[in-house]
Image 1: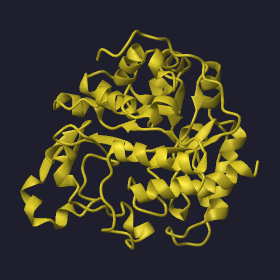
Image 2: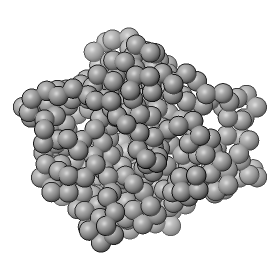
Image 3: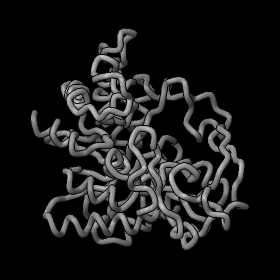
Length: 351
């Protein structure tokens, strides 16, 4: 990349109140990563909308949770694409299905989105929505901001960056070019996330004065798992190493925020209740990092047993979800990812 002179990461002051991040849109209500889900999230009060980004064969950035799309689109029902089914190893894990990098954008646009969790959220909206491009999502945010007067941030995640770089479809420069190509994302808040470190370090080196609205967020997976770039390079680094005091100080040299899995901050006890906080929150704040955990969801299935209501895992349990979010808000988080931004908004506004 040749994007500008290196600039240092800066200590990131917490927002006046925690920001509500629509995780893949209002994905508890509508199929994730669709324009309808993002529009609903904005209507429901999200401060940021989150597209997970993968690349097409012709290099276009589109929003999908994974580059394997067999479960989130109707591609498996398309005889004309049956021969595209592949088996691939991505970040050390084997997948079989259909992958965005094997399709052009025009081909992907003929597919329709499906609910990723049909057993919990039903299939009433399957087949109604296209795969959305990053450019379309930015245009949607800009349009809604113009109509409402609200600043709606964008928090894209670069998915599997080592994999896409290895196959000749690196996404980082494409992402910065797309952000620079819209007046909206040249000014409004943007946070770029990744579960890998190398691409965030490289982005930090090349973010120049024209990118002052862009911050970087280091995502943190389960402690015993590895970032994809460490795995690809044969390094032993695990997320546990990133969460030590030394690891967090290192992150603060290139990122502004960490995004840990919720249970890395407050684990669940054997009895099914939220336990005592780990040192991660305090250590991150000492390093000058904000903490924006993922992901709060409203169904019983995702809640600690103590917050569940009844025995059906698909039951939408707003009271339990609000209790859980408020425990984390009391810890001092600066923002959070939620599949149900309307509930997230209620939790923040009731403080």
